[in-house]
Amino acid sequence: MRRIIFVLCLLGSISCAANKWIDIGSEVNIEELMQNHFPRLYPSYKSNDIEVTKVEQRLKDSVLHYRVTYKDVYEDDSDEQLLWQCIYLPNLHSN
Image 1 (spheres, rainbow, N blue to C red):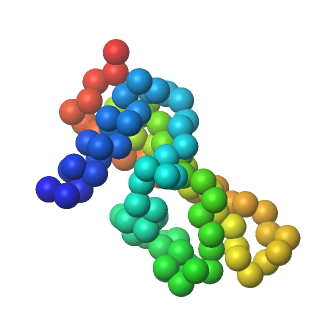
Image 2: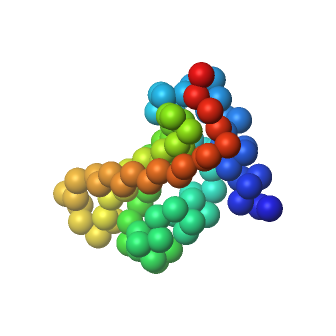
């Protein structure tokens, strides 16, 4: 039930910005997002080995997309890395 509410809250925030990437870093629990949707990266996030610098989402063709930008905290000159995760929402229909 909690996960459904989480997704619905996210959908409400992007309903008018379909197909456009919007920054949701201040609106989402980053730890929960990382744990649920980026399980390979979550241990590094949990141990503070990486810093999430940006979280974005968009809704396109009934698919919720997340983009997470992060960097290695131990390397001063590390480039930011980008991960992308898609979640299919079968009950949504694009207009």
